View 1: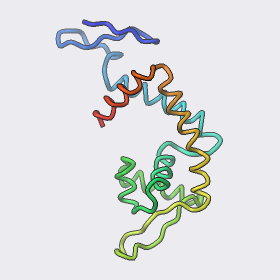
View 2 (view 1 turned 180 degrees about the vertical axis):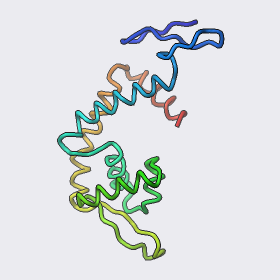
View 3 (view 1 turned 90 degrees about the vertical axis):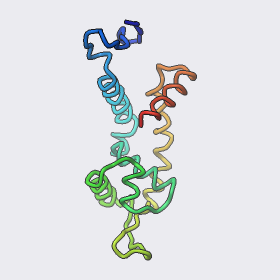
View 4 (view 1 turned 45 degrees about the horizontal axis):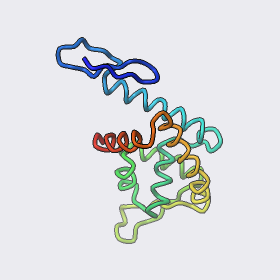
Length: 155
């Protein structure tokens, strides 16, 4: 079994005949990495802006692309219909987004940022960059590029 040493512990790349080691399993490692990234996000954006990572994703995507249907926004941010519905409801309550009828389809509503939403996204983006920087801090530049490329293949 090949050993890999990280800052935290030696990890083994699993081989078919090796005993099962939780700390070497992809699900466990991804969960730990997600916990770390979530803690960094909460420290950087959570308290000051009272925003969750999913709310942040929805706001930034609306900022980037402009008005979207709730269904499309959910797909773009990888949220299921129930989750995006709750995210949108909370953002509407804070008057960060607004809903209007779609002239092309009466059954569909279009979501867009309010002026307050635009201002908030612009204020948060530098912090979002800091979250990414802090999350990837243990990696050098080449490792970051490789890690992100590999991670993108998994999703």
